[in-house]
Length: 333
Image 1 (tube, rainbow, N blue to C red):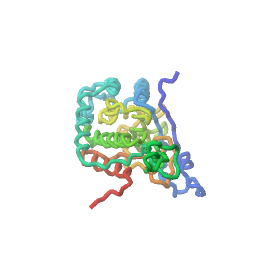
Image 2: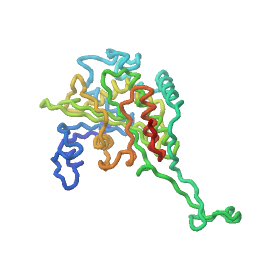
Image 3: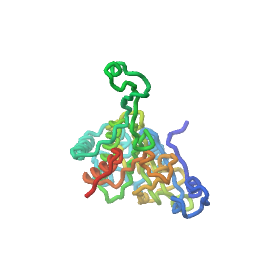
Image 4: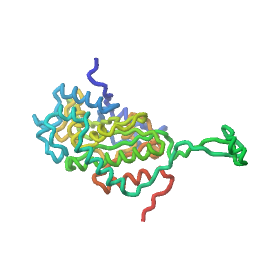
């Protein structure tokens, strides 16, 4: 029986370029969106936080340690983790599945700080009744007897081509960022997901990380590592304590780092270089979905939250994205 359920794949540059090649143009042309990708990508996809923890425990069982030498979680600077009580990786694994009271208070305080500001309200896409004198689905007798338009139907307004919105929080972070700074992108992503669900959208929330030169193979060739974890499925309510954990610095620098393990490869001490400003093809790889790279991601139901490190950036990103679901242009002076 498998010790984990994480989806693993090694994606070669040729496979990647053939997948995203433009019809009529050779796959090895430099005109494709991913033509600059020349290293293999190790793709790890988890359909839940529980799956990611299964894989991390498997990785630890194989002797994997993302830190230098024999360092442990307790040896890491507490300001980088944003938490002081974790001593071992197993402590982190157990903490990921339980409510972190201090983190919940901190996260909710951040949420309140941002939500106090006036933000755009997404256009409600739920079906609403409309009446016509000529056609509809059924007759409203009360309106008929009152001499009003009596044919009843429903309509809704769609501002993108998907009823399900995938909110991707790019959890990549350079070492220079402190643990509490990392949490702000989670604040923005959660606010966006919450507002869109209130407006009738089905929302998935993903925690993703893309990094270059993270691992290397037996011949010393560098490879990139892309990981993604589904934090909230579109059919389920948001599990706030678990979601908050996944958006923290300590989760990223313990659990996410352990998830870089891939049998047959080793990790560099620096764990590679985080990728910000994810390209559409990279989002497609992380979610293992096919997008039209000629269309805006928003029109395909994809929302990217990245490069958010403080309250002002969280408010700016939340406003920018929610504005696109109002059907109105965002005014800037």
